[in-house]
Amino acid sequence: MGVYNAAYGAKGRHTTPNIDRFALGSSTFDHAYTAGGWTSISVPALMRGLYARRLRWTRYYETSRFAILRAPVEAKLRPGERVERSFLFAYDDPHPSLAQRLKRRGMFTAAVVDDGVSEIMRPGVSADLGFSLFRSIDSMPASNRTDADTTNTALSTLRRVPSNQRFFMWVHYFGVHSPDQ
Image 1 (spheres, rainbow, N blue to C red):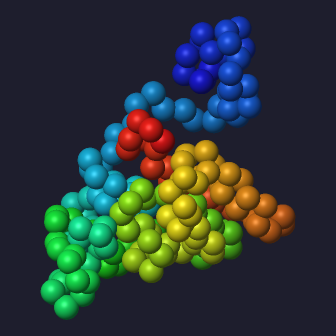
Image 2 (image 1 turned 180 degrees about the vertical axis):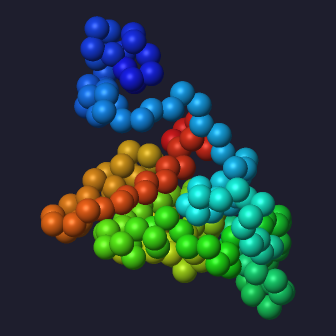
């Protein structure tokens, strides 16, 4: 991107002219730090604008079929399914998310997420809180679940934004988790 590397800017390869033009009137950051090394920690902290230690965490368990379950889990396991790992999630945290705050101020809020094979961001477990439109590409066939497909879903989501309304859209990619995305 030209905004971060002159070799790719207007006098270089000129690969991202629209982003570079947008960046001229924007704040840009050379370094970014996350509140945690796991999506389950970093996304709730990011979306609430709080350090992870300030959030209310609840223990959940991921199964061999990638289901996310809250204790007690025994009665919820399907035949042959077993608990493989546990995570802390902020699903029950009382702090309003960015989407909730913006929606209360009249903005249209949309999200397009891909959380790979997990159910960390499935609808109904809080990642969707405050979004007028929440789209997960997890239900698509595996061959249609690349970052390009996430981008295409995000672009089609933009067409659903009311033309007379300000909006906030969050797009969560999974491709950075593996080299084949």
